[in-house]
Amino acid sequence: MMSRVGFSVRLIAVFAFAMGVAGAPARAADKVLMMPVDAALATTDAKAALDGSVSFYFGDTPHPKVVESFGEFVSNKKTNAFAKSDRETCQRVVLSNFITFQERAKQLGGNAVINIRSYFRSNEVKSDTQYECHVGFLMSGVALKGEVVKLAD
Image (cartoon, rainbow, N blue to C red; front, side):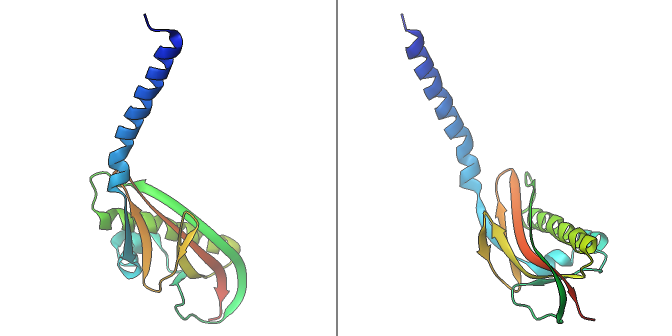
């Protein structure tokens, strides 16, 4: 006859094994992709959601003179990746970040977000033309950090 302690230890071991097996495919499917910013901004969804009142400047892309800075902000979004292409899910989740930046800039009186860089898990990756997208079996994520500013006309 098994003691209660022995049964509890075995139950915990079985649970830990099951969680490890269940989590393995998700970890194995994780990919880090560098995706083009221009392609994401050119989608029909982006054209519908972004009204043009806020400009986006990635990395060290030149921009007009900064008249006023409202500070740096981070947008970290996730989206459902199940049964979607990497391109589709990355474009969808980065658009969510653009919308957040647009809303923040308009709220503060800004007209641009400059020095945008990828900021996934606080790891900065700077590019003038690409953003970092993390694609998993079920979820994709993009985190961006940028400075909301008012640019000269």
